[in-house]
Length: 193
Image 1 (cartoon, rainbow, N blue to C red):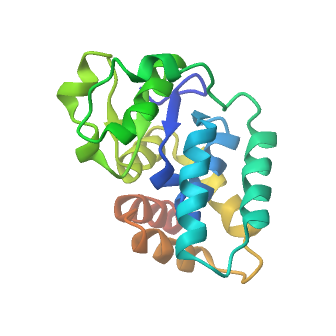
Image 2 (cartoon, rainbow, N blue to C red):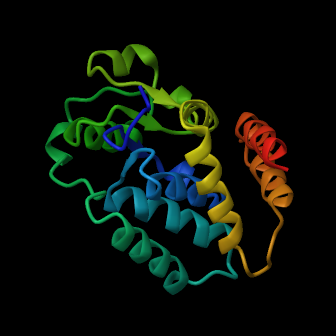
């Protein structure tokens, strides 16, 4: 159950790559809604792919983001998981490190947009599950609406270049597949306006 900061989720590279998802997850974690976990390999994957697809970004910019994440969540980095990789069977062998890290840190689940790469039957033997970020975040909102709204509004307030309204940020969430999340946050916003 996603009810306290004791809930541990390993964040796949595909949910750290899009800034709107990454920022919302990190703001939720900063408010104590869950404990985020990742590995150096996960960071390498999302930053490498972002640099490849967004040549206007520099490796220095992305390293500053990774460093800021590490400072904000000093216990998030998972180590000593590589010995588990060989014993794991997944459709995409390149994703075994994520499950290995999740097992090592005793995560409650893996947050990933690539659910097909983490079939339930493969995860069940490790008492693990995977959730799409939209489902994960929306579940948190349902359980902790006030704190979730606070985290979202904090995210909006940090956006300065360019500044965006809450409604523009919600539109950005929809563009990256967070439709239910955007709708739930919109409903919360309407209740305070």
